[in-house]
Length: 157
Image (tube, rainbow, N blue to C red; front, side, top):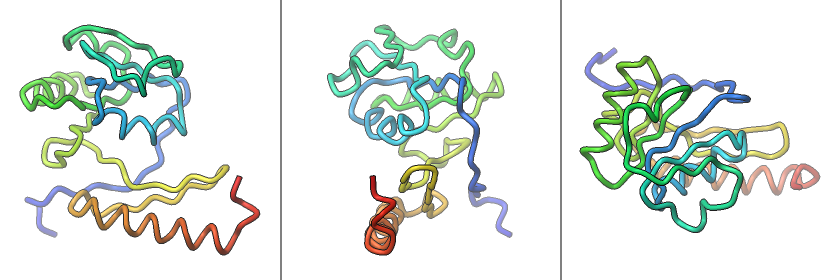
């Protein structure tokens, strides 16, 4: 195995009663939160600005610049700002505390990545390209979603 290549192990991680922190409250965060909120509402967003699509959904909204103390109590962290320097600082601070961090759209800096998912009831299907081809993962997920919808229509609720 090539040890220089980043390798990600697919896992299902228990997130009930666990704080998921998003540093950044824009479109990048919104895209990831759309998946995470299917599993938990224990989401905290820290950002000077939070887009309307993320407001009033039961998340903790903290309007401020990121500080390392924002990591207190976090189980998973998503560095999802559009400022690379801030994302790197979040990553460094989280790693120093032993907290898994995803630098959105940068697998090289991430301790974990999020697959493209289908969730119906208690069933979840996850598709991942090891972070190498997000577009292909999404295409596979969409094709699988069509197959599941056609094959097991009674599960579509």
